[in-house]
Each structure stands twice: as structure tokens, then as C-alpha cells.
Length: 179
Image 1 (cartoon, helix red, strand yellow):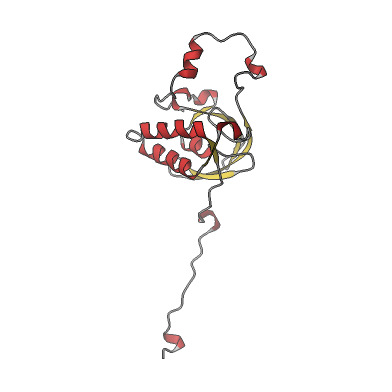
Image 2: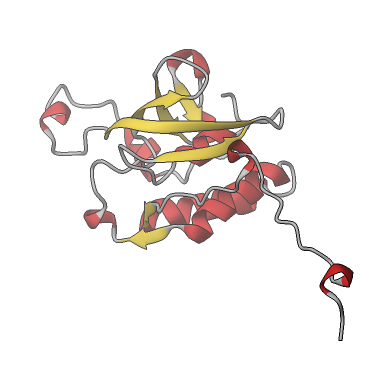
């Protein structure tokens, strides 16, 4: 029989609160966004494996819903999102495909770490994300606005030039990220 003094004592090591792994929030992605983003992640995998892996990870954990049944309050491609970063004042950006990215216009590519973090979130949700420099950040979504859809009041303006028809039919812009 072993004596109590001879038995090793177990120590429980606690991690500081800021190092504890947080569970990512539940996200929803429309079927069409999921298909286009999966194709994009596959296309950029060779030249940008980190961005591709992060996007695939988000797509894998997302609940895929029918295009018509995703809430207007859910961040989708083309959504304008107001969020509060842990680094300062609220920011408003529009989530776009890489070819449409332009940070000076507030258009953030889905292939940026923050763009990937935003997809599928809704107001009130927060997520931890890792910047390109390796630092961890947290953001909280405050508001989500969707672009006007065809047939909405905002689309009843002057007819669009015929060149915009091709933009609606063309596959996702897969050019280099600019934002």
C-alpha cells in the first residue's frame, strides 16, 4: 500500500481568461454564398493557403440555409456591417469578393481575416479572429444592412447600362485582393 506522501499530487493549471479558447458563435450562410465561397477558397488555395484554410474552416462550421430563408440581419456577401472592434470605435464595412475590394471605400474582401470572421454573423454576436500579424482580436457585430435586391424600391431608378447585366451573370470576381 502506498503512503499518502508518496502519491504524486495533481496540479490544475489555469489559463488566464484572455488565453482561454472561446467557442466560435453559430453562423448561417446561404446556399449560394456557400457555393461561391467554396469555389473561391479552392481557387486561391495554391497562392494564399492561409486565407483559403480560414475560409474553408468557417464554411465547414456554418449552417447552410436556403437563399430565401436567411435572415436580413445575417452578414452575407454584399452586406454592410457595423461592428465594434476591440481596438477602438465602431467601423462600417461592406463584405465583398476580392475583385471588388477597396479599403478606401470601406469594401473589405472576404479573403481578409476580418472579412472571413464577419461572414454569417448577426447583430449581438462576437468572434475572436487572428490578424495577419498574428495578433488576436475580438469584434462584436452591431448592425447588418443588405444591398437592395432587384425589384426593391432602390432598384426603381434609371435603367442600368447593359454592361451591368454581364456583371450579374459573370462568375464571382476572383482577381487579386485589394483590401
